[in-house]
Amino acid sequence: MASTSILPANEFVHPAMTVISEPYEDIAAAMVEQLLQDIEGKTQVSVSMKTFETKLIPGSSTCKLSVP
Image (tube, rainbow, N blue to C red; front, side):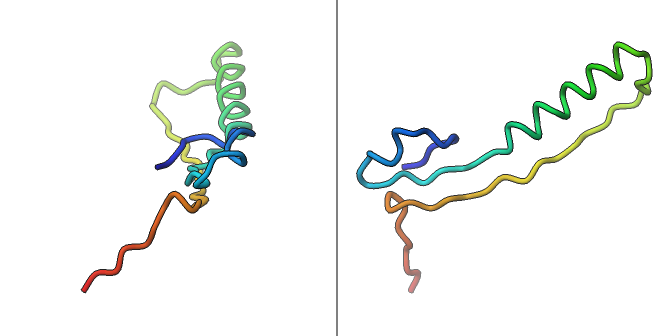
């Protein structure tokens, strides 16, 4: 079982859920910066992509499988 966000309730769930943590503040800041550049007309016509690093936080809901 896994979740895509860290919720305060996760600490009360048993077994502890595995969580994929995403840098929401960094993503929001990049979106606002892009929007402001668009408004000011400083955006190029070409498409650009920015990637953000996610973090896997394994909980006890995830088990390791041994492969023979």
